[in-house]
Image (tube, rainbow, N blue to C red; front, top):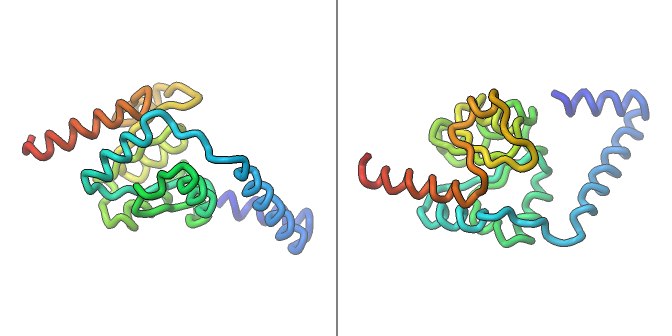
Length: 178
């Protein structure tokens, strides 16, 4: 695991006490960086979350970020209320592109991975969702998908607004028995 390797290297360079203190300082610095107000909410996030939540679909956040920070960000943006579970990167052993975080999310939602959609904006996230056996949906942020990522994603949409339309379509066709 890359975190174990990083910790071992810090302990070797700084001694165990120094390595521990360094991690504490970095964690506190990282946390304090989010005290400047809520993060921006992506266009369509409230709409898709409200729709899925209203349909009674269980939702989880599976983020590489520390759970405490994820919860704070979701609270600050009034999005936490939509989620049944929050999984942070500090709760798993192997980060993306390993499938651990999405397998954990499926487990805590009591759903098989193949029934779980994963909305992702990163290449590692799409890979992790695919490796977990989930249904990856990409909404690119900075980088447009490569041919590899396009092949791994079930769908690719320009914004979250289109994901809402997609899930509405799936729910309506599922309810109609199609």
